[in-house]
Length: 226
Image (cartoon, rainbow, N blue to C red; front, side):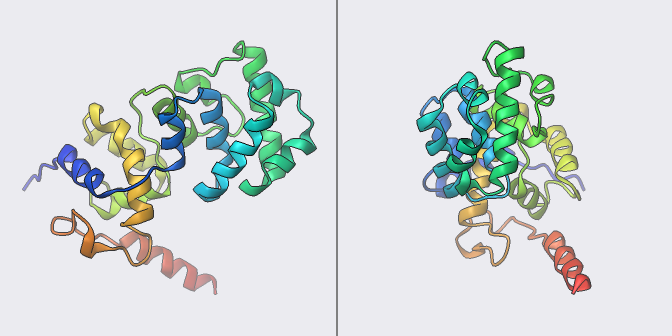
């Protein structure tokens, strides 16, 4: 029997219960420039929103353009973004990206995924984040929350973020793409937690299949390593 999923209403239900904004949401709502959103997304890798927020604000309080960051002293960049973690790697990366944007794109962040993917350290998730949050273009950035929750809800049955993006693009109406990351990041932080999700207050509790196969497989993998 083919089950039709009402993605729009499910997303509406999630949106109704959420509070606050994730970091990229804040930047987008303030109409920050695409360059700041790009750099902040690079800084966000493997760290918390609070750390990304602090590192981003410190960096852009001193350097605001691709030219300024490209010409900045690397040690100064490392100091400013220290809170984001992996600060040496990230400082080198944002300096490289800033230099390419300054020289190859006249200081303007490209708004096509193919161009964004040519930048050092920019993968599908980062490129899609820039499209969604900076340019309001339909795309689905798949981070750990989107990957986990999409599988838990039974929307997809995938092993990797890449496959999750591919399947979501096939299944979800294009006019809903731009909502997925924005809602699932906060949903994953507030309610649909990796461990001990708050199912009792979840608006999708009665219809969610609660597919925890991904978490179970991960726990088994960790046990084998011990």
